[in-house]
Amino acid sequence: MKYTKYQQGDSITLEGLKNHLRIADYSQDEELVMLLKAATLYVQEYFNKALVSCSVLQEQPQADTDFILFLSDQSNIRVRDYKGNEVGFEQSGNHITLSQAASVRISYDCTPVEDVEQYALVVYQIAAANYDGQPEEIAKILKNYPVI
Image 1 (cartoon, one colour):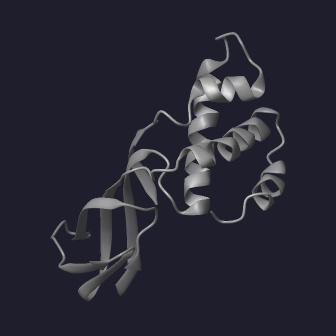
Image 2: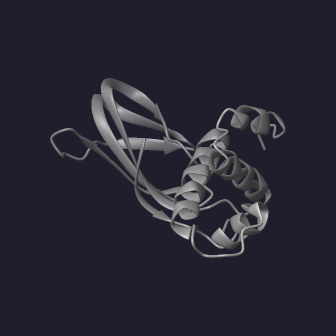
């Protein structure tokens, strides 16, 4: 899965991360923005819920008829074969069914879930673990958050 567009929202912010880390100055903002983006994408993939507006490209090199879309609230779904030709499909929730087996590229836009705020703390905690050089803490952090 590849993100082709990403727009940070209002619920998970640089200011929120800086407050969590108790950082007042602006000298580390560039690094913190990168950590925040990485943590946000990690959490949205872990919980399979869009936390930011984004566009996704899923490449499916194995010929098949059934595919599962990642994240929630997809729109503008486009399915093309590797030659760029559109491929017919039906959608049911997060499932895409092709009319015939094919290797495809599936692209779509995602809208953030309404309750993004409930994910903010886990995003900040994961960003903080990476900021502190303790990525091994991420598994411990996630144990405190059953799939919401």
